[in-house]
Image (cartoon, rainbow, N blue to C red):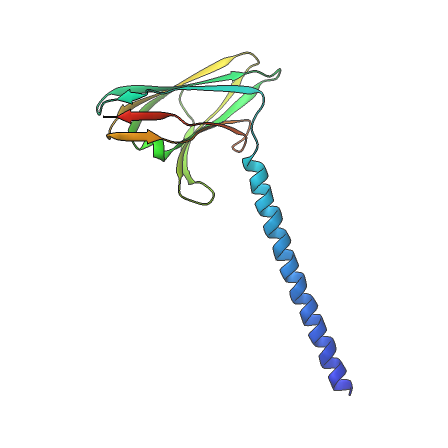
Length: 169
C-alpha cells in the first residue's frame, strides 16, 4: 500500500513539474512575441521624414536618393540608422553617402522574406533642424524596384517607414 501511494505522489510531482515547464514556455513565448510586436510598433513622434527618390532611371544613370529628417520636437534627437529593403536596392549600387555613415550591416526581417541593408549614422539633430542625407547610386538593373526604407530615430526599433519606387529601363 505504501509503495502505491509513493508512486502516486511521484507521478503527481512529475505531472506538476511538466505543467510548470509548459506554462513557463507559453509565458516566455507570449511575452517574447508581444515584446517584439511592441518594439516593431514604435514610431517616433518628434521627427518628420521625407524621401526624394527618382521615379524613373536608365541602366547606367547616376541617381540620388535624398532623405530629409526634420526634428519637430523640443529636444535633440539622434538619427540611429536608415534601413533599405534590398527589394528596392537591388536595382542600384550605392557608391557614396553624404554625410558618411559609421558602419553598415544586413539583417532579415522578422518572419523572413525580406532583407535590409542598414546604414548607421548616430547623428544628432537639434530641434527645428533638418538633416539631409544623400545616397549617390548607379542604376544597375532594369526593373520596377520598391521596398521599405526605415528611418530609425533614437534607437534601432523606433522607425518611420516610407516605400519609394523607381522604374529602371
